Length: 358
Image 1: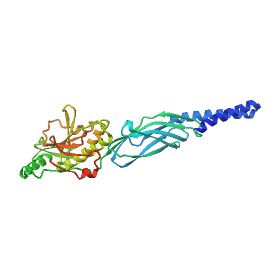
Image 2 (image 1 turned 90 degrees about the horizontal axis):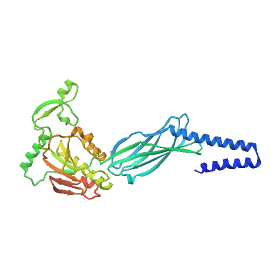
Image 3 (image 1 turned 30 degrees about the vertical axis):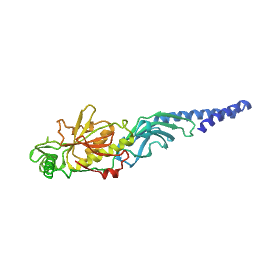
Image 4 (image 1 turned 180 degrees about the vertical axis):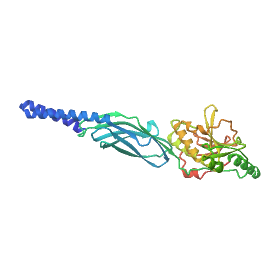
């Protein structure tokens, strides 16, 4: 900034001295300084138009607490190196809580990289927005900036080992419980009697793959079973946007929900995730693999469930039992009956130590 002020002053003083003493060399020097300043200004303008920035990855997901090395590629298409530029960006989960950051660098005639280490302390999407790049000339006498519109979405997921322990009520009738478990397990596995075979579809349990037929056809085939419409266990919740509740409470809710989904996967190979809407409407999705639970969370973060469309269940499902996670009160209920309430600041260890009986 000082150079940009001092250099015009030097030009003015040179011109003033040349006029006062009527010195031709001083006049030539002043003209040369003006030409030099004009060239530096034109160079900064030209290099600004030739400089482009974009993140190396536009979407990543990682676990809460992990530091992400966000790398930004800087492409210089001009024949001249860029001695210095500034990239303005912001990052954060909420628009009113984003932190501005400025990165400085330089690059030769090819491409270079900038990086920033981002701590991800909450579950949700940490948005990194590249806002403006400012290019300086070689002597930092002039600069020009332009807007950029690239961004990075960092989907921050709960610890993969987070899990609620779900047990059947030990006071329940042992014979009835045993029979119910047998029925649920048979249906979660697709039934007991094979009915047909068909090509593999994403979401089919690996244990249903018909390896003999797959080897013959050189592609995966699975067995279909009877009684596929038997009631499934249901995990139900209303999916709030991150703007609807505080960031801290949203983080806690996501961790509880993931622990509930993970705990259910231990007692049932296939279950229903029920996304509820205001007014009583809902969508059902069949969950059968751990990756599906991650997809559920990412869809909730983005408030876009199209990635789950292939797991959508068209038929009406009568729940074998229904566990519901409330994002506002941070409670878990079974068929409307409260079975566990969590504090807003519940830790992962406390969640992992929670046992609920159904």
